[in-house]
Length: 246
Image (cartoon, rainbow, N blue to C red):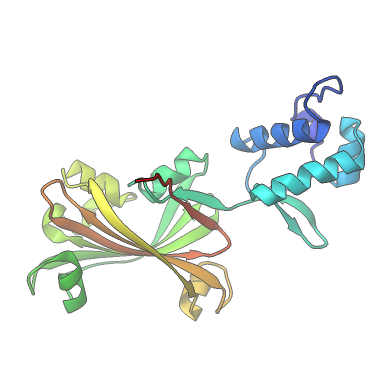
């Protein structure tokens, strides 16, 4: 296990900033700069204290603060690890791939199914389409690095893509190339319990806490182009939104 002294800047005992806050800041910056990656294990608190020439109380206080922030997680009997949770800004209309790359993660997908057909009654109502309108449906698992993050089911109005095969790795990239990427969307988030199929695909257990994010995307002229449902493990994703007073 790498010594933190090899990857963190030295702490300054003469600084006005307490040592535990210096250590917190150093670890926080190491995570933000991807020096420490998701699920990386930290050395034992005793070893960190020896390596950095500080007390174990200083180390424990620093780590407790980072655990409270959600940057580190404690695993009983295993130690402290960098959190693998992903923070998604609920107010920004970005794709999964864009979100992962912005956080230094490598996105990829495993396609479960690509099909074409006509809208179901529920889809017609949601997308504001006439019965019989052609649509494409995409079902896939979304990964960050090697960790499954979500199971996604997306329905796209067929006239907005040149063909089903036009979507290779990125749905939004294909829509953008066709000049039909959504410019605004309505999103809804709700809690649920993962069923057996979802749990298997996400390496979770049936009945584990999950999140469902539904997105209805619109073109500039107001037409709906996309309806997607993304099922997330509840322990891997945080949704945030900036609020302002009226």
